[in-house]
Length: 293
Image 1 (spheres, rainbow, N blue to C red):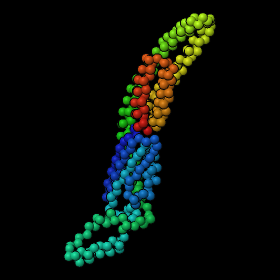
Image 2: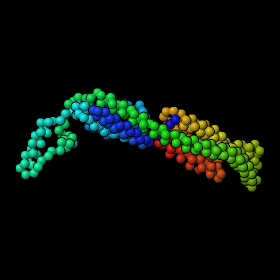
Image 3: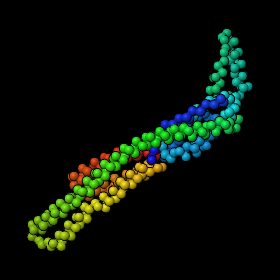
């Protein structure tokens, strides 16, 4: 069953050496667009993580954030420039002494001093990387679960609307023969009156030709047949597994084209009303489809 492009997923991992939290938020988008927020020391793993995400998603704008806490900086492949950090603390201690104030360094402030941390050009700890992989996969599973729930609601709504579209299409198909018959009769009477007024002769064969041309111009049987086929395929696409958004969007466009042609050809007030109702219902389906992957 199709899934929504809108969803949220989260997974937290806690071990003795480290902890990390993945959060995933997504909205609809024509293509797959991933935005990452993670510690800079783990940026080298972005391509690795992207491959994991692509196995779970095909469309949508996805914001993925990762927060990591470790007991050792070595797990991230970085080290503190202790010499520079020590020199800075010594200078601050001397300044405090000269000013006659007590100096108690806040060692946590060193975490935000990015210039004090050196990249040792080494990959993060393999155990941490493996844990991050698993955490991302479980966050994606949670995210997909929420998308499936919303997707199911969308499909239920669209299925009801597809049924309404069938009723409206059937009403158009039922009305058109009556319109055709009335217009044929009116055309024959009008032509006969005009010919009589002009004092001309008009053979039955010629009259039959004119009426036949009118019938061909007003005939929408092909459009009605194609419209019914599109509605069948909409039901099939909404019930199918995998990516359905683009397929549903294309079929809705085709259904719109066929019903629009019916309205233009029929030139009837009642048919026009039915066509407008059909388009309104179809547009509501299109709005739903914009959020389906």
